[in-house]
Structures are given as structure tokens and as C-alpha cells.
Image: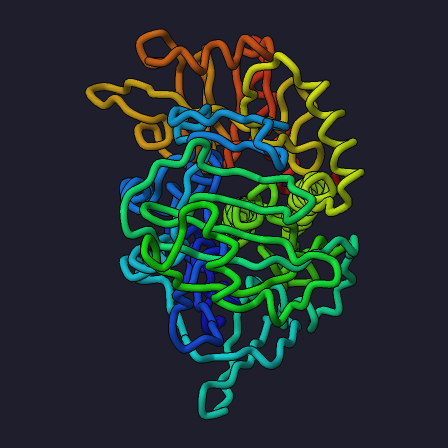
Length: 500
């Protein structure tokens, strides 16, 4: 018997989200957080529609609208205001949420913390810094409190969600791939005195004289970021008077706004090469760091713990081999790597300070996009390996539309429920899927209010689609093929899961 089922190191948004996802499944979770009090300054400023859906699975969905503001678009602009890239956002995205929502991160963390308080299985120990981890029959985690008094807990699994300077990652001696792409920027978080409309919400000004970022950060708040130029003093840049001087051309002055924070930071592009060592795992910034230009840092962390939570659950319940946890690292490391590479590619375009190179960039991009309308955000990235069946559509993220079941009409996840889902046009015998608590949904026109799911099945020539708890499709089957599909999932869970 262990003191707890899972120890989570770090109580930021990623660790707190994981604690809720596990406690909702009935597990005892202890969270060790070195800070004695919640961190009250924002870091992330937005999340995409897929991430909103994942956050809603913690039970905070009804309150997300209160602390967020939908973004209306994202543009890159030249120094003279010409549009290099234009992406239009909608409030009705394919996953049942706005394409992008801006937010004040402390407000999001307060929502998650309130949800933590509702769940009896979670213990949060603040002011406890982890100093040792020993993985034997059970994992022994030692932390010291503010008086340097040690406390040791035993757990079945430990997850390091302890940020960029992760003790857990360093303790595991995990090698890290670092792309060496980094620049220093001045970050200015602003609270506006009067409401202002910004169209588009998010802008990258690709000005070689000073690359600049403008983004929404929740109702009544915005963030400006200014790149440190070659030869410029970091100390001089990191002053409030510099922040006000740089924001003045945008109508942001001490008379129109307050400046809760102004500070410099250096972004990085790196990922851990291993995400599991024995019974210890990594997630969030402990596992990966990326430039901010694609807005995927926190989103990637939420995807990490959503992927991990249901796999830990099945392993703890004895419904899957421990080797299932290897697929966590295989799947998420590859997706995080792709997000980092995409962010670096964007950064190489934006962080240009040579006027001649910027002029050449502008001319090339403008010629290529001439006459093209605003684009749409790319869909959620599919899985290309890991726990998936080799069938059409395996790995893609299933969309979310409204459905009608009995007297209830609403978003699929709320009406049908979360977990494993079987969408089928046939009359199945759940068999093994019932052991997993699978929601079986027989598709017809009356159920499929928005006509989302029948076209989704038709796209892959499928009579049945088996969806994982993280909304990725495990696999599809044609008429009469459901038993074989369910059997493939059973075999993959019970046997060693091959790497992707």
C-alpha cells in the first residue's frame, strides 16, 4: 500500500489539470509545489479550440467563457502595415469551442484550483520542494518544507510537471535536444483603462527596426512584446520607462492603461529525449519548451496530461500493461517536436533585423499571397504512431458537434460523456469495450443535430469509429469489422505497446 497513487511535482496549470483528470477517475493524488502561494502573473495568454475541449474535460467548461475572450484573427504585418499572413478565427470551431481564446492565466488557474477543491482525492502540499526521488518497488519522493523539514511519500507513479528548470528531469538525467534558437524579448502585460477593440486580436509586426508582438490576454488585458535588438542593452530594455516608450505609438500610455508587469525573457526551443524512466514521467515545460509564435506552449502541456491521464488510469486499474505508458512519450514527444519546429520556423521569419533580408522576405511573401483570402487555423495534429490501429482515419482528432439524446441536446462531450467512445451505424455487442466504460453511440440523423458525425464516418468509409479518451481516433472499421477493431485495442492494451 502506498501513501498515494500518483505524486505530481508542480502545481502550475499542467500539474493541476493532471491532478483533476486523475482524481475524477477515482485515484489518490498528491501534488508537491515548491511555491508557498499561487503565482499571480500570467505566462500563457491563449489556447486553441482543441485545448479548450481538453480543459472542459476537467469540469471547468461552463466557466471558461467568463475568463476568456475569443480571438478574431492572427496577422503578420510588414513595417508599413501590409499583410504577410492572415488567419481568421471563428467562435464556432470544429472542436465545439472558439478557434482561439485569450485569457489571463491566473484566472484559469483559479478555475482549476476551485475544481481541485471539489475533489476529495487530491492533496496539495504547498511550500514543499522535492529534493530526492527513489524508484524501486514503489517510488519514494522526498520533499522539504519551508523549515527544511523532510517528508517522504510513497507512490505508484510520479509525474514531473515542474517547469523549465525541472528537478525531476535533472534527477532522471534525461538528455535534451536543444535547437539553440533563442532571442530575448521585453514582455509588457497591460490592463486597459477603457474597452478597446483590436482587429485582428493578435498581430506580429515583422519590422526589422523592432520585431513586435501584440496579443490579447483575456478580457480587458493585452500583451505587447518587443525584441531586443543586436547590441542593445538588456538592462536598458528591461525598464518600465522603455516599455511605455515602445507602447506609446499604439495609444498605450500611463493615462490609458496600467502596467502590472514589464520584464525581459529568453525563449528556448528544446525537448526531453525520454519522457518516461521507470515509474517517473515528464509533462509540460519539464518535457518541452518552444518559442511563443504559434501559441502552443501551454496547449502542448495540456495535451501531454490528457494523453497521460487515461493511460495511467488503465494501468492502475490493471486493464493495460505498464508498457502502455511508453506510448505516451512516443506520441507526445513527436507532436511536441513538430510544434517546436513549426514555432522555430515562424520565429526565423519574424525575428529578422537586417533591413535587406526583411525587404526580400516581404517581397517574396507578398507575391505568393497576392489575392488570397484569409486562411483558417490548421486542424489538430493527428497521431502518426503509438497506440493506433492501422486503418483509415486512425490518429485524427474527432470533431465535436451538437447531438440529441432523449430530451438532451448539446455538445457531444457533455451529452454523451467523456472516455472511450464508439461511434457506429451498426448494432454492436460492446464486449471488451464495456470493461473500459466505453460510450456506445448509434448514429442516426436525429442524434447528429449538426450533421458532423455521419460525414466524418463517410470520409473514411467507416461503419464504426473507436475514439480514445483524448479524442484521437484509435481506429475505424467497415461493416462487420467492429469485433476485430475492439479486439485489436484489447490486444494492444494487454500486450507490450510497440513504439511509434
